[in-house]
Image (cartoon, rainbow, N blue to C red; front, side, top):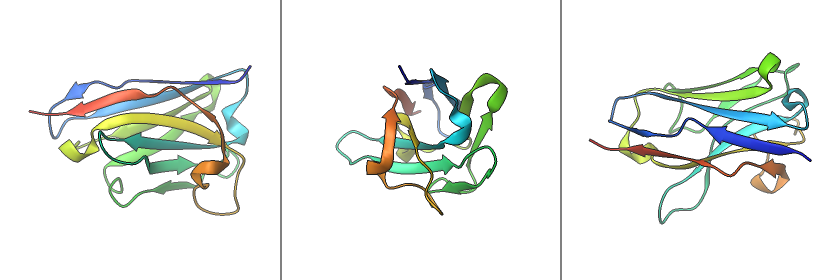
Length: 126
């Protein structure tokens, strides 16, 4: 069956960096839009970033992530990364990756994602 597994979450100080990984099992991520979401305690899930198919390469970011986060893929390893720099306390939460059939533009609606990982927790605190 098809699985997504996130890893890389940790406790870091404000201004620190983390690189999250989303590894696919049972299917190639090359042909999917891969999105990153986060959910902080007491808040709704929000989209952070997404990357389109390998052939497209288009990337999109939430305003809160622009200039600090970078999404990329390593096709040889069937992994999508989310590099997070200059982390802020408001970046905390459980981060999820998900795979979706591609829309024409932008990130898919959350309901379009077919496969979800179990999440990895990011904490930002001094």
